[in-house]
Image (cartoon, rainbow, N blue to C red; front, top):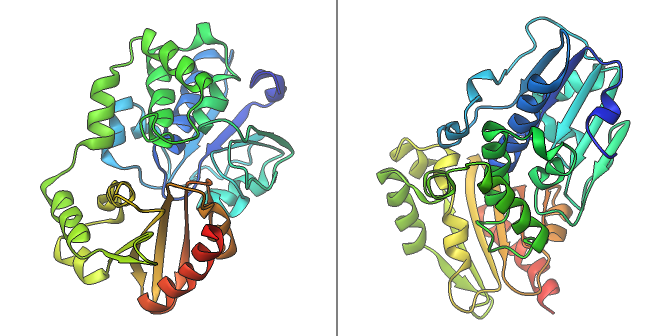
Length: 317
C-alpha cells in the first residue's frame, strides 16, 4: 500500500480503532489518521474513532474529545481501519464494528501481527504505528495537529528514542515533525516524565519492595489491589515504573506485575540484553516487542513469577 487513499476507494463511512488500554502510539496513530481523513477527504464522509478511555496526559495533542466508546447510530462501516493492533481481539469492544464492516484494513508494526484484515500493511522494522502511518500520508498534508499526534506515538514506542527499535529513519521522521512546529520538549515532559505525587509514591514503593532473582539478572516488583485502592490509583498511574526497574545495573529482564482480579495479574516485561520477552509474552497469550512485551497470567504471585523465570532462563541461556 503506497497511501491510505489507495484503499479508501468508494468508502463513505469509515471507522477507526486501536488496541485496548491505549498507549501513546495507539492514541497518536488513531488521532493522526482521523485528522488526516477529516482534513483531506472530499464530500460528505462519516469518520468515527473508537478507543477505550484515553489517559489525560495525551490530551496535549488535541482531539481526544472526538473519541467514541460506542456506536450509537448502529452504522455498518464501508471501511474499518485497525491501528497498532497485532490481532483482532486486541480491538476490544470495537471488534464488533470491525467484524461487521464491508472492508477492513490493518496498519501496524508488531512482528506478531496476525494479518487479520482484508488489507494488511505491517512494517515489522518500524518503530511504531505512527512511523508506518507517516509513510502512508503525504508529507505536505501533515499539519501541526497531525504532526503532534505522530510525534506522540514515536516517542512513546521508542522510549524517547532510546529503545533498540529507533532507526535513522525514525530520527529523520521525528526531525520532520519537529520542523512542523511540534513542541517536542513539552510533549516529552508532560506525556512521558511528568508524574503526580501519587504516581511518585507508588513508584517509590515499587522500587523499595522490588527484589532481585536469578542471581541478580532479573528484577521483579508487584502492585496488588490493596495498594491501588489505598492510593485511589488506576493502572495508568503505573506508567514508567517498569522502565525505572529496567535501568537497574546488571539487569537483563525487568518484570512488573499488578493485580487485576483474584489470582490474575497484568505482566509487563522489559529486556536489556539478549532475552526476547515478546516470545515469553506470546507463550502466555500476550504480545509486544522483543525488548518490551506483556501478558495476563493467572495464579498466585509466586506462581506467576516462577512460570516466567523458567522462560527467562531459557532465553538467557
